[in-house]
Image (cartoon, rainbow, N blue to C red; front, side):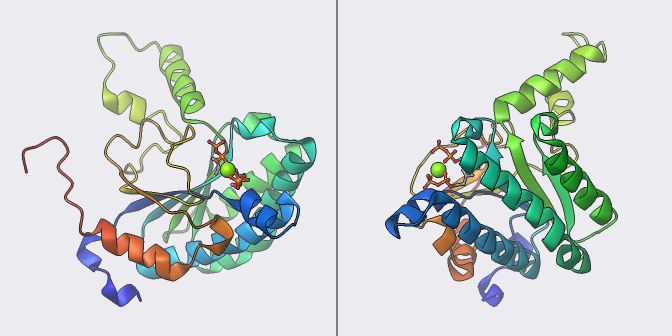
Length: 236
Ligand code: IPE
Ligand code: IPE
Ligand code: MG
């Protein structure tokens, strides 16, 4: 399937809003956490497919700064899934040369979640394959505030500040902006995801709920991306 893809025009960075787990479970009369567990399987599949296709960076939106509004049970369940992912998957990811990079405000996470995230990052820090950004307690506005605070702390003046300064103080510093955003689950909005980085990202939305998202559809979307004309404000 990757053979359809033009290797010279691959998106370098793909960002994914993994949405629709709850509705997928509801349609099956199952609890929301059943959907989140199913979603983790899709995550594994899509990470592997990204490596196979030669994508350099994938950013997965796992938990937003607004997702704390959910029931304690659901929040705890999601955090447990994150810990499980960091513990159980790190071995295979490491073998596949994947570098894990958790982005977001890690300070508000419990010690257990934070430590498992840091351990996964440390274990895979020297890997040179796919960079897997996991956005956990991530908010685009929160990230910008964090960047502004850093810059003020460094004593940068109003005259000196450039776009590069802001980019260099985001959680994604050093990485190219996403070329392609995919959101599953039928909603057409950003929900506070990578607001600065998505200035010229190509957007694709699908009604498919995240647990049902397939590698074939993923590759089809990358294929569609390759047909788009990115102008960045120029005339052609
Ligand atoms: C996405 O699925 C996962 C997270 C936001 C953590 P949802 O839980 O938002 O599922 P829906 O949108 O309610 O179906
Ligand atoms: C966005 O989904 C966050 C994640 C997928 C982690 P939400 O389900 O939280 O977004 P809204 O509430 O529908 O905008
Ligand atoms: Mg949702």
